Image (cartoon, rainbow, N blue to C red; front, side, top):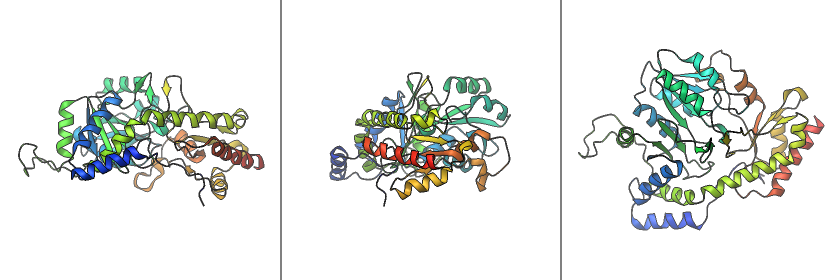
Length: 370
């Protein structure tokens, strides 16, 4: 029996009241006032002009790529350590995802290794702010501008995180968010694209609605998709957005407590704590640690040990270059090590300090026996 889950949403009367209002309005599908409000207010929160809500985060990535004209024969740079959706969205466009190793200090795509993967076919870079930590955006922007590449930010795990005091999601040509049930704010399923480019926002609005001409009902100028968010989802999202700063502070409180309870293991170099670079504000979507190889501690055995005590965890993502659809050889030493040693710990809002202490105590017991 799971006593301490990995994640769970913080839902209260505000979400329920919005959903009731949406139901009473009769607009429960992909039209209604909550959709426009959620798009506008979330974009404003992130410091961006326009929002285009979508059915999920993967749809947002695909919509962004299509709007930017990514097509067969193009290449798009993707970090090797991330959820597979970024690579799949490129493949949906019949383009080729080109994988780049991640930085050992903060786990996001390594800018120093992007340059060697750029070819005449490269059209864009997808940057993923992994586990709530921002990428090194200044360096990535310099590379993109020099090589005339688009930047797509995957912010599925980093709502409200900041790079040098500016919110992530405000740096790219298009940024893509997920509002899946375990994200910092949720609509159950759902996603959003943000951009400052009016031409791109109009293109995405048409593409997400089957490519229908907005001025000529049922006339389809292009092949589009059904990537629309419902008014019910947006009603939940709007209520969630009102508490986003509280949720982020909860994530940071939990991270601080984990760091305190686990610091003795970190000082012995038995584990590596979740990083936060001096130029970053990490939102610790899932508080994550690395189990160091040299002590003979098994990450997978630790996961099973914690599960035996009712603690839900999960391993880091597999390196995408190891997965059957994209399998190939290459130099991805950092992503391979992180994937092998990384574990995500319970990190839900309002998690009690005694539960954090219980998780840490069981990690210590296992590592001391190993």
